[in-house]
Each structure stands twice: as structure tokens, then as C-alpha cells.
Amino acid sequence: MGMSTRFLARAAALALFLSVSGLALAQPSELIANARQALAGGDPERAYQLLSPRQEEFAGSPEYDFLLGISALDSGRPEEAVFALERVVAVEPDNSLARAELGRAYLRLGELDNSRRELEAVQADPDVPDEARETIERYLAAFDARMQETQTDWRGYVAIELGYDTNVNAGTDSRLVFVPGLQAFSDQPQDLGPTVAAQNSTFGRLAAGISVIHALTEQFALTGSLNGFQRLHEDGDDFETADVGGHLGFLYSMGPNNFTVAYQGDRFSVDGHSNRNANGGIIQWRRVLDAVSQLSVYGQFQRLTYRDQETRNANRWTGGLAYSRAFPDLRFSPVAFASFRFGDEQNFADSAPHIAHEFYAVTIGGQIKVSPETTVFASAEYEARNYDAPVPFFLSDRRDRRYSLQLGVQWTPWRLGSVIPRIALTRNDSNTAINDYDRAVVSVLVRRDFD
Image (cartoon, rainbow, N blue to C red; front, side):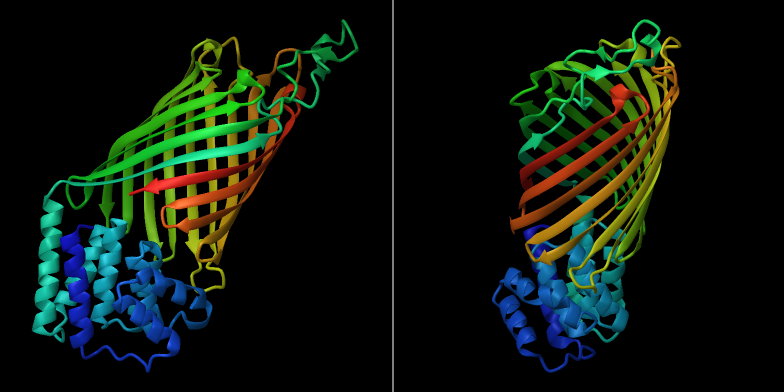
């Protein structure tokens, strides 16, 4: 939000605070008094740090929620601001000051229709004094002018990760593997070479990305992104990986609904050589169900081409849905999510039917905020892959069942910077011995965001 718009928003809030007769706050406690003093002194971060840890006690009190909403908004936490201010409006629907701040929070989140709705509701309130109404009108005028101008919102990040990987090549426990199709010649396990057995290594990973939304109208926007990473190993150089990918498309917003149609492209490399290209598109619908939950449904198509393994070239179709919900009124402000995806990958080469497969996966996870700077997160996933034919010499159709678990802590000592230690565990249970493996990755990631 520009400086002039922010000034108008704050002017509106101050004018309403001084003049709206319908706002009746209770006698402030020491906590409320200290938070108001911090806001008046231009220190919303301090006000937020005072108020946020007390949500379990005071959430639902309009006075507390209003100050929490303003402090969250002015300290760069618009999502939390919406939660708090929505609670105020639910209890006091005629609270024009809360609606004005809620409109500003929606604007920060890019929910333009919701923002305009709240601001126009304030403007239409017959009890709003003329001085406050004029301020709101100037705010709406600035909003209209802002929408008529070229609007580009961008975000970026850079990250470095250091860690240890017990299985950089997703290899088996041993290079000696029983091959059923060869038992007529030998009943001994076959030595399939060093690349089949699991290789461990410390690693370093560099990553960066940028995403852009360019508003064309109030409803339509162009959206794009570009992301990449390079992973280097101390050992196992043959399995060092790199990736560059992105998307370009359109975003359409209609109230709580957002629709995205985009082209997606990706180039994956192994050991410095191009390994796989993926080109396709995605269609996604996301709906904000209420102030604390949302649902998304998507369909995706990818054409996969391999530079040196043409028999693996394939078309891949994926569909899925995801749901997330926040619980800001509970202790530690938990957030939970769940997703389900399914799909089909069919390769072009009739000579390699063992590559084609169907799959589905279920993921659940969540996070809790143990302090204003510290979030603990976890997720678990189960994925099943059923292949169309046996792997050569292994006689039975391949069936994989993969179990994954991730645990971590995100510490954010400054607003746009995080330190994230985490551990990821994977077990791939396959009826084909060369695809049966375990893997553990322990790492620490340092990330810097930009907006």
C-alpha cells in the first residue's frame, strides 16, 4: 500500500475513533492501555507483541480484538488482522471503525471486492460524522485511482540450506538384489552396481524465486512466477540436482472465489545435465469459506520429456483438492490442512509399459505458534503408485507405497527472515527390490523474503 493510501487509511481510523458515537469501549485494563499507548506512539510491533500472547484469554472482546487487529495489520500481519477484526464486526456489526480497518486489511491481502464492500458500508453509515465520511470518501477515491493505475505486486525470496541426506540417490540398502527373472541362471543375489545402493552425503542447497501479480481490472490480473534451486553434495556428485520452473497465467477474483488458469514449465537437471522437461497447464479454483478457512480444487496436465530416456516420455494428469483452517481462538493459534491428489501417467513408448502408472496421495499437517516468533509445523503423507506392468526381470506388476513425515520449527526473528531446522523421513515400500528404500534428511534452512 502506498504512503498516501496508508495515510488516508490511518486518517480515517483516527477520525472515526474520535467521532463515531456508537463505539463504546470498556474501561481499559493495563494491557489495553499499554497497547493503545504503543499504537499512539507509532510502534504497532510492540502493541502486537503485548496483545498476541493473550488471545486465549481475551479473544472475543471487541476492544481487545480491535487493538489486536490494528497492531497486526500495521506490523505486517494482514491475515491475523482479518481474523481479529472479523470477530469485532461479528459482535458489533455497526462498528464503522472496525469495518474501515477490516477494509484496509482485505486490501493488503488483495481481496479487492471484500475491501470495497467494507469501506462502502462505512461510507453509507448515516451515523458517521461528516468529517469521517469525507475521509472515507477520499480513501475510496484513492482506492479507485489506485485500481485505475498499473498495479504490480511482487514477492521474492532467497534461501540457503545445509544438511545431511542418508540416501541422495533413493537407493536400496544393498547393491546385492535378488532378481526373480534371473533365478533360472543363478539363485544368488545380483550385484547391480554402486549406483543402486543408497549413498549418503552432506549437502548444500541454494534457492531463489519471485512471484508477480499485475492487476488489469478489479477482477482480472496477470500472474507469474519463476523459481529455481541448485543442490550440491560433498559425496555422490552424480546425483546433484538443479531445477528451474515457473508459471504464467490469469487470475480472476469474484467475491470469495479466485480462479487461476496458467501455463507451467519446468526443467530438471541431474549432475549438470538436463534430465527432464515438463510443460503443461493448471486450472484452479480457490474459495475463501470464511475468515479462518479456505478450499481449493485443481486440475493439471504435464507433458514429460526426458533427454536421454525417450521411453520415459509421458503425459501426466493430476487432480486434487485441499482444505485449510485456522483456529485463532485456541491456545497456540493452530492451523490445520489436508489434501488429496490423484492422477495417471501414460508413457508414449509401447516398449516400456512398466513406466506407466496411476497414483493417489493423502496429506495432512498443521502448525502451532508457540511464541510470536516461533512456529512448529508437521506434515505426513501417504502415496500409492500402481504400475501397469512388471519391471523387466522382476515378473510382478510394480506396487509402491510411500510414507513421508516432516517435522520442523520456523523461527522468525525479523519480519521477512526465517531460520528453519527440519527433518524429513521417507519409507518407500515396493514389491520391486530396486525401488525399496529408506531416507532421512536433516537440515537447517535460512530464508530471506522480499515484498
